[in-house]
Length: 145
Image (cartoon, rainbow, N blue to C red):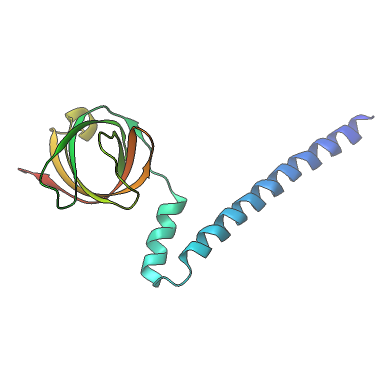
């Protein structure tokens, strides 16, 4: 095989990879759009944005306290990682997906870039495993500040 034929074959393989990636992206997009069908426009925009972008995770083991919404007893735990939109923490009780929970934690100064911040968060469980819970933070407030 001469050099021109090899270069041509290499170019075709490269373009095939690009086309396959574009097809995969279109399939993901169509699945996301199908999930959004029938929702109000503002909700569609917010959900689509959160489905397409994923906040970077930071491995940050800090103590936290959580409780299912309306429960009186707080349960102490430890985070595995934190992002601007959620937290992954060790679960000591069984929590189901979509359960609303309250979380209290102190973000250390090295994470905030300022002083440590005590946070109270309302969150929704989005994923669970045998010992970990991933929760999306719905709203939060800084305590004592």
